[in-house]
Image (cartoon, rainbow, N blue to C red; front, side, top):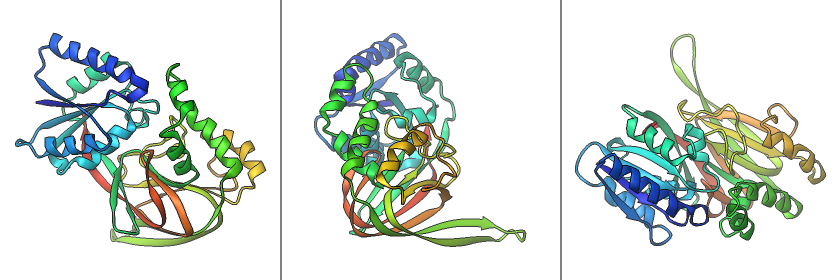
Length: 318
């Protein structure tokens, strides 16, 4: 059975047209399904919990919405082992779908999902805050500049305007530039955990500590891009059991505008001020609270977080 969670508000209302098309195609193909429409913030999470607790071991759960709706659904699933996950993208960013190679074209996206046999098992990230609250993320979790931009973008009039022209992802770039003028930098300590298997076949954990005196942001990536296609970690993979860290530190504000194009083009690896590294987990401590996001959703202002990866827990219909 296919269960659809539909968010009509995605893409400034274009999601309704997308669902109408999906609805038509499902009837044309004589596909049995049930659909649930979200009514309020957090409703997608509640619906996902309800659906994932239904009997059976082959629950096909499909989101018709954007990255925010996908994040809610991931955090509502109670047993990933019983879920096969699908996406019909309708948002302005669509970084989750982009990371999986799912097209924006509704007919093609639905065909990919319906024709999937075994799918792919991908990793899901998890961020844990200082009060013990946990949040899954499929795309990324970040603290600092990218989180501030995500928070602003949730209710951005610029985003709503650009969505009408189908270019809503540009709002991330516009808000990033404006935020760089006013944001503060932070003193932080980050402990990075990686693992290595030696010649003797024994797996060993390696701990490195990084100290940043003027951190602009740190993003932990599961897919290569966030913010509507910005390639924070061009080599990131959602199937390697790692989080790909992108940290920016110590760049004077006047230089950030010169180096921003390097980031948007994915040409920043190895450049001064950028740290890109694959890790198993990390522990992050800042000198004062910083804005935190997961998949573009505002989580809170925190000083301490832990991030880790849950390897291969989500089966996606691609």
